[in-house]
Length: 420
Ligand code: AMP
Ligand code: MG
Image (cartoon, rainbow, N blue to C red):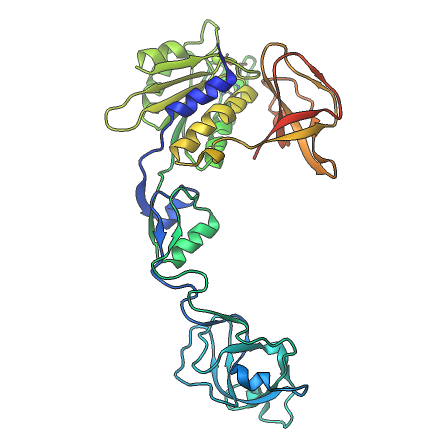
């Protein structure tokens, strides 16, 4: 049995980023960028109207008093239009947000500054090309409401750096910069195998002695939520041939996550099967509650990075805690993520109720987290133990209490893991 911190460090030391590859932008969502993105355009690409209104010459407007300024509208410019018409002294252009500012103009006056006309023109044309407008903008500043060419970034500039996670803004920026493809970490493929002769599929009504396979769907969800590609392998009964065949298939993935069959019972066949499949055992059993029986190893492969292999305890809550502590960092590292993204964040919180640490092992207990004027508060939740998923639902966090059997009271400060 090894200590928890050591076990986590060992997993981290065996995980390596998968080789990056070139992919379409749509495929790169959530991945880590492995080559910088350099823009092929300025942003804004040209001087751009940032408001609907009138493109004017600042010197025409600066001289205007209380009554505003009267200008001839020489052209209407919608977004997507281009015009060769110049805004000369005493004139302006009606312009829409996103349209290029015409030659001669150097500021935009918002449409809200349009005053009723002095003399009635043809009403349909009022405020458009061919009409005369009166504008008054009490807050006028030179150059206002124009997005200047290159103000955000320039052609040839690196806009996305290696190691960045491609979330929504980054994907949008890559598109703006002309990167239809990027070089990024591939999706981590995680095979998920549930073992146990008692397990039936969720559609079945379990007979006496049977249990629905909840780990399969749960681990599928956990992998998917981390941006990985879950490969569901179903259930293998506690027979060596059944587990062996499924494990052989699962070892083709980047990570194999198996649940059940790793403790010390008669039918806990998994460690032996892993050994026969050539998977090197790195640790078995960690000082941790729940999750003590967890198994970790790796299989060397000729033409691809090693497969990391996790044997998680069958009890669903133990399985999930072990997933978060061990599989999560492995997936993150394979996906090329920086160290600060390997683990769920931890924080200090004030307890709102009493709880107790385990004597011999660090323990994780579900809690509800709320923010109050006193900071982060953690309410211990009722939980019957490692098979109780209900107690974990709605729990925004896990209390992380060191071994020692200490009693904690309301008001004590504790460490919590923030679940996502
Ligand atoms: P094991 O780790 O195989 O000894 O299983 C421990 C407990 O977890 C037993 O009560 C199993 O029935 C239960 N269990 C194992 N695998 C699953 C699963 N996939 N879904 C739900 N419960 C499971
Ligand atoms: Mg079992």
